[in-house]
Amino acid sequence: MTNDLLRLLGERDLGIGACPVKPADLAALAALTTAGKITGNVARAKVFPAMLETGKTPDVLVKELGLEQVNDDGAIEGFVTQAVAANPKAVEEYRAGKAASLQFLVGQVMKLSRGKANPQGVISLLKQHLD
Image 1 (spheres, helix red, strand yellow):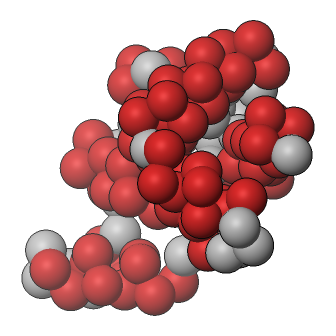
Image 2: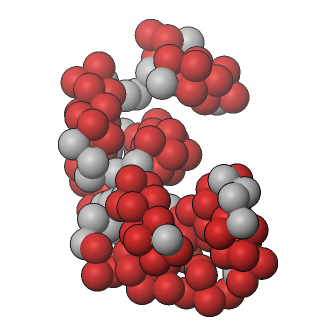
């Protein structure tokens, strides 16, 4: 987060003293990630920049932007089914022993879920589906 903070402040020509994000809000953002409410990528790419722009707290932004992580296996299963059906070559390669194909499929599920699916849940469900 420190690198992101410094980069984004530099892009806005702001010094650290002019940072609109409070330390408590950075801690709250980290807590949302640790608790599995949002992914790390969503925190870095969407919530944190929005915090800088708006001054809103991470909790408010996650709700307003609809960024809560999907942890429901039923919902994730739907994305997994779609990704598997749309990528038969990757499925075949995974079953032939190419581990990188699993990561490709994870990426496809994440794309379908707009980055909201719990990555560990995605991996688990893909393995169940493919093995």
